[in-house]
Amino acid sequence: QVQLQESGPGLVRPSQTLSLTCTVSGGSISGHYWSWIRQSPGKELEWIGYVYSSGTTNYNPSLQSRVTMSIDTSRNQFSLRLSSVTAADTAVFYCARGSPLYVMSIVYYVLDVWGQGTAVTVSS
Amino acid sequence: DIQMTQSPSSLSASVGERVTMTCRASEGISRSLNWYQQKPGRAPKLLIYGASTLQSGVPSRFSGSGSGTDFTLTISSLQPEDFATYSCQHSYITPWTFGQGTRVEMK
Image (cartoon, rainbow over all chains, first blue to last red; front, side):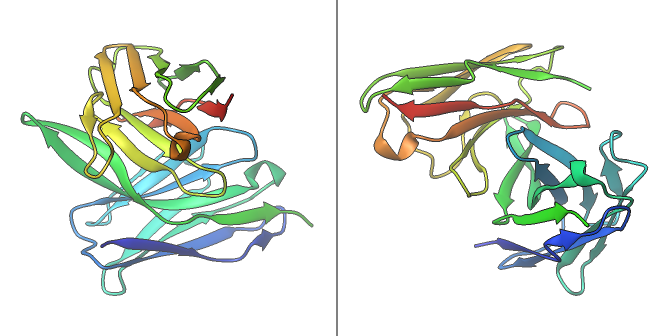
């Protein structure tokens, strides 16, 4: 079955850029909304955005000015870059597959496959 | 952004009990509501989508209902493996947002 694995540094200095990659195995990268979600300590999950398999992106407006997502279909990977990080960006970052699921011809978008998550700390 | 509010924030229950939790959206989202289960140190797992459709492989003791702004997740007979945090998430429009979660603890 499809599996996702995040990779990237666990420590990032303030004001620097956080870069993470998610590798997709066991399935096609086409036709899905490849998403990043984060969870700061003790807080709810926060959707950061997605990159569609075509390369189209959709970012959370709260982070839009600092976020860039990209996809490399040849390597079955997609990536997140978050610039100008502060301590408030310390979180567990998850990559996830967004999929359209149909119920009686109505489409619903779900996050149906998740990576295990990677903890990123912003600290000097 | 559409805000998702869950209640209660935590509850204590025993194995075999029926458990119900709610999720309220700040505006109508039709049935574009998903439920996830998350255990400590693990990624969320999709349980229900479209407010009431069980994801493949999810036990039938889980059920969801609601539309518009008010939604419910019910576990008909709580099992030991169900002690976890449950989060709702809307996918009506972007940005997709999550509730703060309901933590189900052992009584």
